[in-house]
Length: 458
Ligand code: TYD
Ligand code: MG
Image 1 (cartoon, helix red, strand yellow):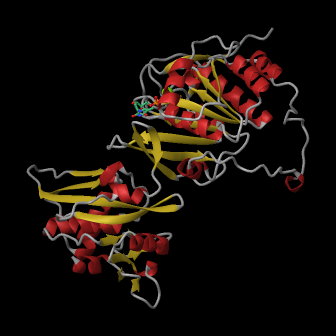
Image 2: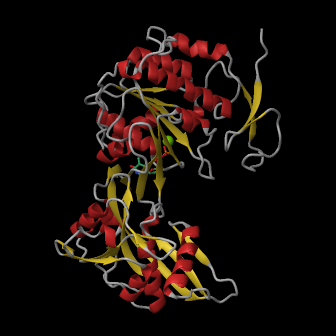
Image 3: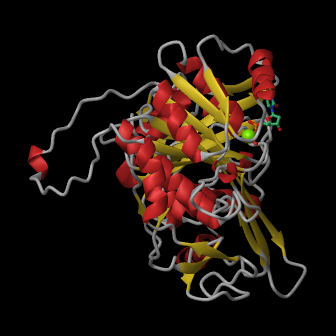
């Protein structure tokens, strides 16, 4: 018999080594290397045995892509518009979705609510590995959820879950959480790299063969990466994070990987004493501004997946007390801030080298793209000159290294959203402004071509 092969894997980054060492050479973390016994053919057999009866996918045949039969299986609506949006338009049968998040983010609550809502129309099975059946029942009862046709089991063995699911034949299976599951063939503790990796692989294989949609709950370590190897993200179809921002009342659901739709799509929920409620118009909460505006604050419109989101950007410029002025940005890229300050100096002659510069995006929102360049500069100039920008002014646009202002995607949609929210003035790149007219509804549009024009506006 061949000897079982052993490798050593880093829990944080998934790098593999042939021998144990104290520090991972790939990511530099200490004490994260674990022994991983590669599951041989034995492990495959035990789960595969449970799945016999379904046509295997790999029958060794090569076909033309055009000839592959595609069954038109409709997506299952989860009952929550915000959740569906993040998944790319509903639950895809046979897909594996990983729901990650910190402890207490509300992963179990979200999935319990979804499962109960779904149970009206679809067969569902909820496997709880962390809480007892009574605890789950108590919560469902307290939230007033329909539980009559929800099937539930407390189980931590993947082999048993597979055979239970084969018997129940649900359309949606929830496994809460993957870190407490174990496979009998893998001899290491639940939560270890080998167990998490093999358990997720077995459930993925199960989903693909049976067409059952599987939701896996995964915990996040304190550094913000999913406990267990990165491998977990590779083998699932969608990886979704449930995050609590600065304001603990709101939870954002964000998609990091999606094989069936766009990423960067976000869904917003509020955590109340009656569970999670979806928020259909998030701009209204992120843009909850005071009546009187101070210098240094400006609204902008960012593009999240397929929809616009209005947020408030704040800048503070203050004379530096030390030789080394500070540059700090919360919610935007710090390197980009340094770059914009250089452009401001070089092309508009405004020197902030002796000033501390702080930037903050209100509500704990993170802005990735470049569309916040223009509002960021405007907010900083407003703080620097101590002249407030009107409360109903919005701005967006990218600034290039030569001081030119470049258009951003979906300009018209952003303008329409701003107009809908009652803004009366928009400062936008020349190429994003509508042709031949200088207003949309009640909103006046001010196109700008370069950073000098922007400075003249303030
Ligand atoms: P939970 O779903 O258990 O989190 P996870 O499974 O991600 O660890 O959510 C627990 C948190 O949600 C807990 O801190 C309390 C809060 N919560 C409410 O505020 N209201 C509610 O109705 C429920 C069910 C939970
Ligand atoms: Mg939980």
